[in-house]
Amino acid sequence: MAKTVGFYTLGCKMNYAETETLSRKMKDAGFQQVNFSGVADYYVINSCSVTEAANKKGRQAIRAAHRRNPQARIIVVGCYAQLKANEISDIEGVALVLGVKEKFNIVERIREYEEKQTVLSCVSAINEVDSFNPSFSCSERTRAFLKVQDGCNYRCSYCTIPLARGKSRNPSIASLVRQAEEIAERGVKEIVLSGINIGDFGQTTGEKFVDLVKALDQVQGIERYRISSIEPNLITSEIIDYVAQSRAFMPHFHIPLQCGCDEVLRLMRRRYNTDFFRKKIEEIQTKIPDVFIGMDVMVGSMGETDEYFKKSYDFVESLGISFVHVFTYSERENTDALKITPRVQESVRTERSVQLHALSERMHQDFYKRFDGQIRPVLFETRTKDGYQVGFTDNYIRVQAKIPYNAHNKIVPVRLEYKDGIMFGI
Image 1 (cartoon, rainbow, N blue to C red):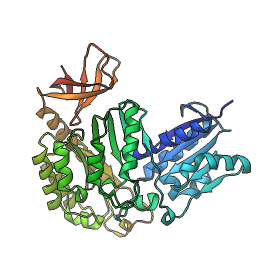
Image 2 (cartoon, helix red, strand yellow; image 1 turned 90 degrees about the vertical axis):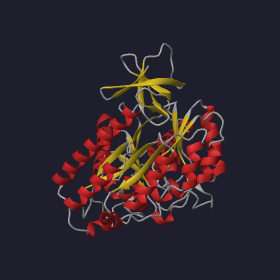
Image 3 (cartoon, one colour; image 1 turned 60 degrees about the vertical axis):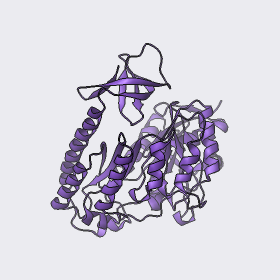
Image 4 (cartoon, helix red, strand yellow; image 1 turned 90 degrees about the horizontal axis):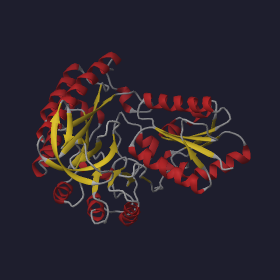
């Protein structure tokens, strides 16, 4: 009888792409996949370590799997595994801890574990990590996440990603085009380009991210592309101009700001200031008037005084963007931010998060209202229990519509009607 395996993923979209790749590898080796919530012979947890809360969720997932089946072998991969291998190895039920260099050798490491029957921790020094492992996920059938880049050469003072993922690296444009063609053959309509610092694409091959965009735009069968989080200093005018007239790249950007205060940006060691950021946003909005722009903003970082937070809040409010993904700062070991003062109290961090979430909701609703009455193309993805089919417009407005046929994985033009915070399609 085939051995069973359940997967659980924490963290970024790239982790989801990598989990599905690991799943395919194990399936090819004869494993049968089951739900993580069920009883399995092996559990694979693809972990995250961007905050202490992410570490905690990883530990909770390990203990939950062990409770379901105390005889199961638990495998932990991902950023938490890379950074805290010894801590994870000591948790009851863990059989394998695989760092960033070893996780894609999961089948071979399982065989090694089964021979030795002892906990194995396979974690290389991060400066030894230089390979790129292709990954994509398309379990949603309408949307795939394609990993185009890994690692980061930046050294932001608060961030452990370079310690967990290694240096910036990427495959060739030609290989990514082939993967996009394979995704298209599966009937998927939309691809989200994913990575740690995707605008830095080309460190390995000498190519440019804009050339990747242009090449992928030619792949037949893929109707939509979205660019996941891209650093503001790496969004060139050439990229903006191309997206503005592209066949398939959607009017949608997600750009990490982190803080709207220059004093804090310097403490964070970000590579821009608020004046640069504003001009970049204005350039995008001028060239792509219907664009959806999401932003990452961190609250409560070391050194963020009340005055600096007020500056950041006012700056974000002034930009007229579409959505803010709010993060609460979490102290991370081995980061230079720990040397910065003052430290913001947890209660203050929570209060600031609440304020920014409220601002984000207001900005999001204001963006939706702009398009009330317009006709926009919607790629339908799911269906609600009460019969609505749900999808997203080209500029990332969530729409629910009553359609008299199954519109799943179809792009349908609908007239938008905004009502009580919800966008309906009629």
